[in-house]
Amino acid sequence: MEIGGWSPGMVVLDAMEKAAGVRILQTELNDSPGVCLKMAGSLGNVQAAARAAEAMAERMGVAVIAHVIASPDAGGQAAYEAAVDFNPLMEQSTVHYPVLEKSMKDNGQAPFAVGLIETQGFTAVFEAIDTALKTAAVEVLAREKLGGGYITVLIKGDVAAVTAAIEAGKAKVEGLGRLIAAHVIASPSQGVLSLLPK
Picture (cartoon, rainbow, N blue to C red):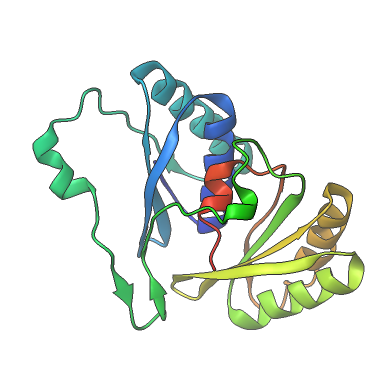
């Protein structure tokens, strides 16, 4: 799956994992800006996950390319499995492998919500997150840079608090930058948790 934006990518990943028995292999950031989610599972499950990805992307109004390769040739692995890569301009890796902290390994969904605000411009996201933190009992989990000035900040808390915080935060972006996305994932899937920036 290729989707424009890291936060929409996490929402789509959550939808795919909740719709079908698939697992995330790795993600790779590109300069669109966007993210490529590489998934594996049985053909039927991957096809169901692709349909879920397309449906979620349509609801969000975000373009997605969902493509399924049935029985991929082993020789192609060298092309689609990216090696660890560090982008010095963004000061972070562009290839992410799923890693779950021991405290999150329960083979289920998280008992909390994750909120994502993605902007083009640091000032806008900093103001949005400051407002979010002042609005509700939430905590900052991490931030992810995508390139092209796109940055996502993630917050954590109960669903009501995260929803209130994201709504308040996204209202503060106008005039400071461009709002790319603002989402709440209730009970995020293990794949989403495994890709949260550390």
